[in-house]
Length: 260
Ligand SMILES: Nc1ncnc2c1ncn2[C@@H]1O[C@H](COP(=O)(O)OP(=O)(O)OP(=O)(O)O)[C@@H](O)[C@H]1O
Ligand SMILES: [Mg+2]
Image 1 (tube, helix red, strand yellow):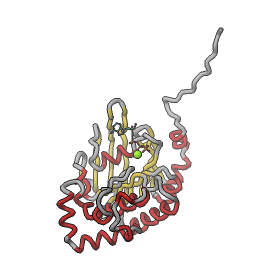
Image 2: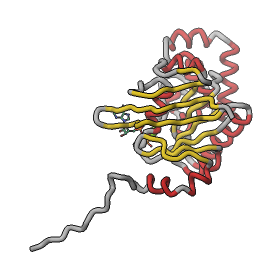
Image 3: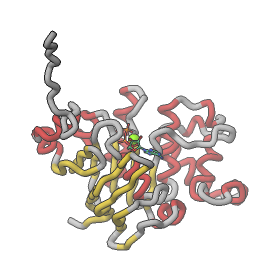
Image 4: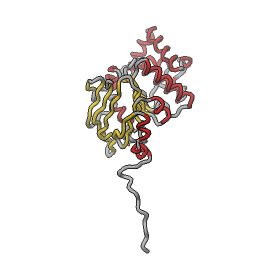
């Protein structure tokens, strides 16, 4: 096994909130790795640190052994880490196809990139192929703002894929979409994984995570709590405690006795 993406000892505070507290994570090359944990446990913040959107106060990020800590998002993207966002970030006032064509330039001068791409037949062909892969090619000329939330997620997946990243970070790909679409996304991920893509997936849908992932890391209060196979994680009592809100802050409250 080779580690493709690695975060070591990452800490990050926002004001008084310690979003990440010495968090470490390894993603093996060729794996589908799951990242789970209760709301607010730091999953999205870790994604943001690994993709250059948030600077860590402490710790390092490595891609294929190269230190990429504090690289800017466009550089990280160019180095081969693609990501989607928990709340999708697409351009609503241009078409689905146009969104695809700005995909590779989205961090800088996307308008210039779009103009160039529109005249390049091969880029349009490739964009259409990926839209077809995720099943929304028929919507190519629709304004992206008219897409449903699930279709936006598929568009985001397609525009990440068009840039051909080595590792793909998905933030809640199954969140807020119907079951048919959830299963479709799972099968797309499996197909891509077989063709060599590595995935890191944040998701609250346990069936989705457990059915898809080779390894799962559970986060709790900004740190990695448990890492293992889906069945190891499921059997670990610490995980249940984390989800039920157990922790050092939750001491049993003594019933108040009035001495009246
Ligand atoms: N930009 C920010 N400014 C202030 N606080 C932030 C910021 N980003 C994250 N936080 C805080 O950091 C903590 C971790 O948030 P994060 O979004 O990483 O959690 P999460 O595990 O992705 O949760 P969810 O499952 O609800 O998406 C939360 O307390 C959150 O409010
Ligand atoms: Mg999140």
